[in-house]
Length: 193
Image (cartoon, rainbow, N blue to C red; front, side, top):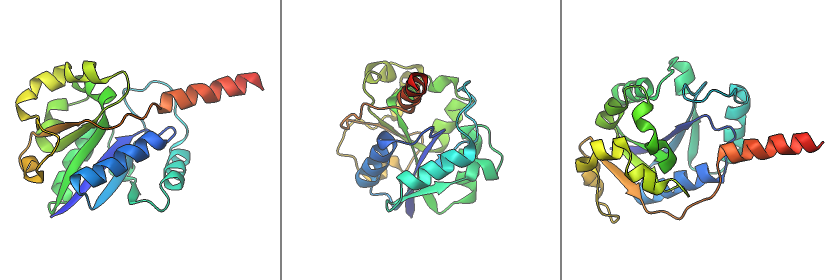
């Protein structure tokens, strides 16, 4: 069965942290591919992002020559929530085992995502450490709710992901960068000109 990692987000802008998570997941989980799912608009983010076309273009540029495919699935199926996208993928690609990839910062507020429990029950989740977020992430409502389905050891066996819910907190090297920081730096630079 083909194995694909999914990294969803606004990618405003895409950065080396996104690349690191993607390539680390590919190695750890022995994935065939990584798909970046560029969201037209994140319902939890209020600020207006760069245009969708700009974000897709930037994703293609930064991931050039890497085993990452930029997918416009959310736009094509008119999905405004991750659970809808996941439901579509699981039902549309029955011969693929998908892994939802995300940073620890997302786990903290995951319980605020629309139908968050359904996401955990439909797809294996792989969470990567993020500087300043890890302790809160592991104490989060979602981590507590799905504590019994957490894969406890780092030297994982891929068959541990055969059933869902199943999730792993990866003890990866942390990359100290975020899209928010990059946007803030951009605004400061504009203000100096």
